[in-house]
Length: 293
Image (tube, rainbow, N blue to C red):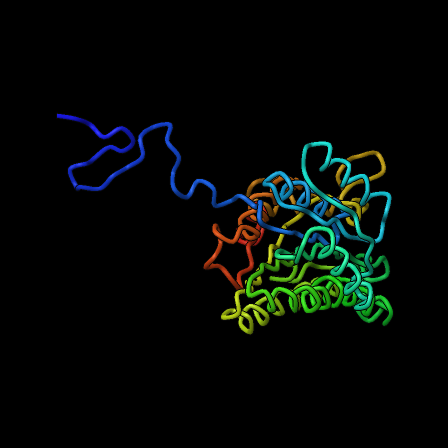
């Protein structure tokens, strides 16, 4: 009796790949056909996301306000064999966004994946222990909402989403926050703005579901980054009291690292891997959001 060379026939009559052969879906995470824009790619989390996507063969446009950090990130990507460019952008300025979209289209082709990773807080929007939200000045509230909702999700999604809708395909991923699911004490403006990002994600997903554009969010838990380092660590490198509270409430008993967002980022960017996923908020928080007594 002869045996097929590339498949093994089971009693059920189905064929399975022999050891060493490629599964027909083994390339579902390949991003060779994708042009990815990472707004906020000059930051800690956005920068690592940009590097991760480039590692799966995407052409990546790193965008942000810091030319120095942006070019450093591009250098890291190209040094590893990836393809990337830096483009300065002001995410709350639609003219700046439209210019950036044209630059990417001219250099790489139409954008197919948008990561909205810009965001942060305002020093005056973080309450001191025992302080009232009434003490937060109006400009601090507006700054946090402009940075996280308008520039961090809405305006870029509309500018780049328009081109995606015209092409009939695309994926938009917003970086939200676990704080947008349940408010975190002392940072009410940030929590409220990120809650709005999650709701906006679902709204755009609903509107664009039949037009080939998927919209999802990733909600990180506590990840040390430039904007929160002073809240989490003392000058001597020891953890603050707030850090201890966070760790005690996190089942995995540690902070996250930027590389631990890569899996969710690549999955949502890959059109084959997440083709039936839209309107979702993927939580990466070490269990913080499920912790109880």
